[in-house]
Image 1 (tube, rainbow, N blue to C red):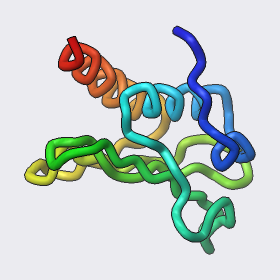
Image 2 (image 1 turned 90 degrees about the vertical axis):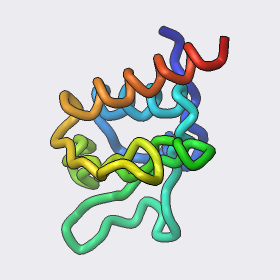
Image 3 (image 1 turned 90 degrees about the horizontal axis):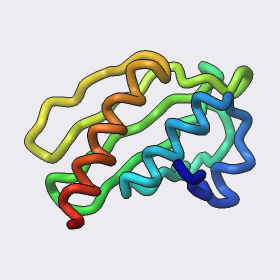
Image 4 (image 1 turned 180 degrees about the vertical axis):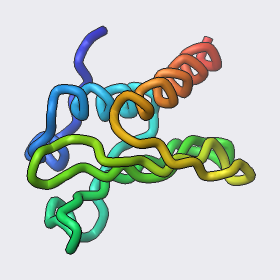
Length: 111
């Protein structure tokens, strides 16, 4: 799969290859990963929050917490649409299949 440009905002973050590939997958799926108003400044727990927000009321949205020190995905809280239940996923291994599902759904819908 071709790499997706994460833009200058996210490219400057320290992250593992697994975290970068998950965020690239999120970008490919149209979730527009971006930082909040605090930017890359970690919270008091040493985490940086990357927001996801796909367009429309049925879009996937939520946030992925990255460790500011190690660059690993700590956990993600994702909701597939306004009327769905928010779920917590721990680590890149659990987050990747959700974003792969969303990416496949968007590619199938674009045909």
